[in-house]
Image (cartoon, rainbow, N blue to C red; front, side, top):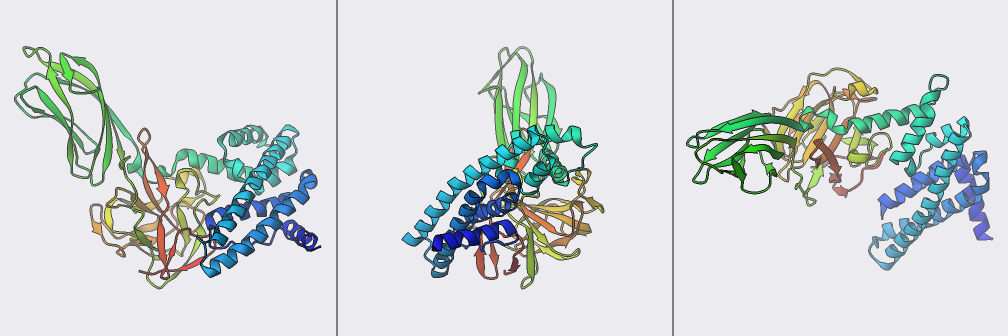
Length: 456
């Protein structure tokens, strides 16, 4: 009889759609994903299409509520690693299997809505998205279905989805011009093997040839204030042998140089020539975030801040920006360095904002490189709201600027993320998870809507 009562209560909670289960701290990342799907499924179960599956959805919600009740007890007792904690994790993983089955039902419903032009069902599915909606092929199917109908039908959820899709395609790297990959091509002739030759200066990368007993050694020097990755490919060689393959990738810290290849003439009586293609990207592919670092929240000590979008936020924090976090703070809020490093890029001249993709490159920001060659981005600062200079070393807790509402933004907030180079061909960065000191305790996953106290 108890199980029947629990199921009935679960049905009420699910159909109302306004109730949210309290996700325990233990295994929060896994639990929160399950809870978000439960809430979405609760709303979807009101649709006639899902009527045959209401009991199944309600049972999923009831099991999740029971699992969370166990998790809350474990969390309170601090037994996350003990056998009870492992039992809780086992329950969550079993529910994750059921979650995937319900997500397949979601995909089937979405396909049904598009095939039968069921617009109310289509809108409801998009207003309550599940994980499959982030799949590239499903997104393309949604776009193919909706685009021809846009003139006669405005679906707000579809418009938001297509805007997010375009935003992801633009890439978060569009916030920072310096994150682009650069490419140059050149032809080189070396007739005199007795002098050091500067071959090319390109975006503060110097390529030069230094004579030696065999011929030349080709070097690259990074005159930028940030670390870079270079890829150089040699082509159209005449009268030359390279000491190694005809392409090489080299990582250089700021102000450092490194050897690329030795170049030996096949016939010393004549000159040598070759062409090359050079690509450059900010950051290093070998960068590994120092997970032993605890970041401070980037605001004044003792202040309290609210997270408006956390890790994996469905608005914009997905793909390469999964581990970004937005803090809802008024314009003009002082922003402090969350970790020591060096300012490598900054912008403070923009004064516009909006939710159209045209605003992507109009955010004011500060970019700081850390000792492990990751980068912290502080974005949407107010016009003139940067108080540090490029090249300046800053300590943790140094005032670097003031928050604002510039660029691709729907309201005043600070966007913070730690990134590392992810794709040499495009210069794209990807975010990495970090932990914060929040009120004296360690916070590993910022939660949307939660208030945190800033500690040193």
